[in-house]
Amino acid sequence: MSKLFRAVIMGPPGSGKGTISERIAQSFGLKHLSSGDFVRENIAAKTEAGVQAKTYIKKGLLVPDLVMTRLLLPRLEEMTKYSWLLDGFPRTLAQAEALNSACDLDVAINLNIPLETLKERLRHRWIHPPSGRVYNMCFNPPRIQGIDDITGEPLIQQEDDRPEALVARLRHYKDVAKPVIDFYKAKGILYTFSDTETDQIWPNISTLLSTKIPTIQSDARCASTH
Ligand SMILES: Nc1nc2c(ncn2[C@@H]2O[C@H](COP(=O)(O)OP(=O)(O)O)[C@@H](O)[C@H]2O)c(=O)[nH]1
Ligand SMILES: Nc1ccn([C@@H]2O[C@H](COP(=O)(O)OP(=O)(O)O)[C@@H](O)[C@H]2O)c(=O)n1
Image (tube, rainbow, N blue to C red):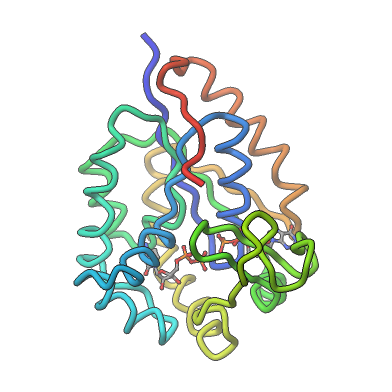
C-alpha cells in the first residue's frame, strides 16, 4: 500500500528553502508548510507565542524550542491526511527530536550554500507578507519595483534580513544545524545539495524526489498552501 510522504528542507537563511519548496509543492503536489510563515502569522495575530517570538527574531535569534514546537506541532496534526514538506523546522536538535516523536520522515533535504552567496541574496530579498511570496531584486524581481505582482500591494524587507540581524542569524545557524544534520544522517534520510544557484540544485532534487514519491496515492496529493 502506498503511504503519505513527509519531508523537511533545511538550510541557512537565504539558502533557497522557500524557493525550492514552492517548486517541489508545484511539481509533486505536496503541501508546503513554512515555519517562518507560521511564526509571522502568529506575530501578526499577536498570539502569546507570536509576541514571544518577535523579541527573538528582532535580534536575529532563533525562537526558543518550546515556543516553536508549541506553535508548529498542532499545525502538523491538522495535516495527517496530506503529504507535506516542512520548510525551516527543525532548526535545532531538540526540535528534530520533537518532530521525530510526532511523525516518521522519508527525506531530509539539506541545502549547503556559500556564506557570501547568502549575504548577497538576503540583501535583495523582498516579501509580500500576506501571501508569503518572495522576490529578489536580481534573481526574480517583481514586475514593478516594490510592488507584489499578483495583488499590487507593497513589498517589505523583513526585519531579520537587515544586515545587523543577518550576521548573527547566519552564525547561529551553523552552530545549531550541525547536530540536526548528524541526526538525519544517522537515520539514513539526509540528502545534501551544494551549489550557488537554485537552478543548478533543482534538477537534482527533482530527480531524487521522483524516485521517492511515485507511490503516493493521488487523493493524498494537494496543491501548495500558497
Ligand atoms: N541570485 C539568486 N537568488 C536566489 C536564488 N535562489 C533563491 N534566491 C533568492 O534568495 C532569497 C532567499 O531565498 P528563499 O527561498 O527565501 O530562502 P530561505 O530563507 O532559505 O527560505 C530570495 O530573495 C530568493 O528569491 C538563486 O539561485 N540565485
Ligand atoms: N524553527 C524555526 C523557524 C523559524 N524561526 C524564526 O523565524 C524566522 C523566520 O523564519 P524563516 O524560515 O522565514 O527564515 P529564513 O531562514 O527563510 O530567513 C527565523 O529567522 C527565526 O528567527 C525559528 O526561530 N525557528
